[in-house]
Image (cartoon, rainbow, N blue to C red; front, side):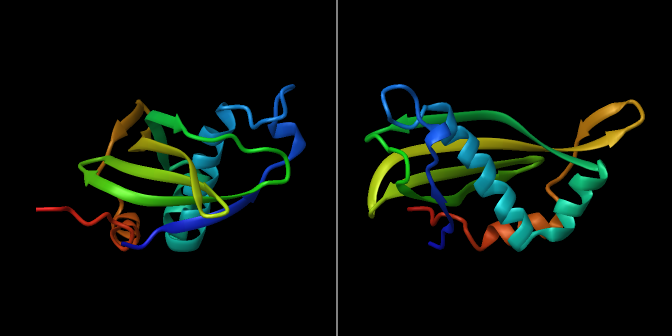
Amino acid sequence: MREYVVLHRVTFDETNLVGNVYFAHYLHWQGHCREAFLADHAPGVLSEVRRGELALATVSCSMEYFSECYALDEVEIAMTLRRKRGSRVEMDYEFRRDGSLVARGAQVVSCLRRTPSGVSPVQIPDELSRALSAFEKETVS
């Protein structure tokens, strides 16, 4: 299984008074990883988002925390595809520091088209579907 990986160096403003990373930043980093993936593997989809023709709306997300991270730690954020279904993409994330798992997350995104009467769900764009397929988790039979 291939993972899409981005590296992030934790900044002081991402920590709380105790000195560890504030929990919500991990969710924020999921978005950074997803956006970097679009830039690297689905630039046409990114162009549609920029033009306001397509929206990728997060409909659910979750996090589990196993260990704390601190300012100036380098965190590896690895994204894999769990499933594509209709208009929805389900992704899993692992957050690692020095090769050790510090957190795990998940995110469901819905693909929506903007129309004069609002937004409506649409099939996952072909370019995005093809790009994500390379990072799909293997299913165990």
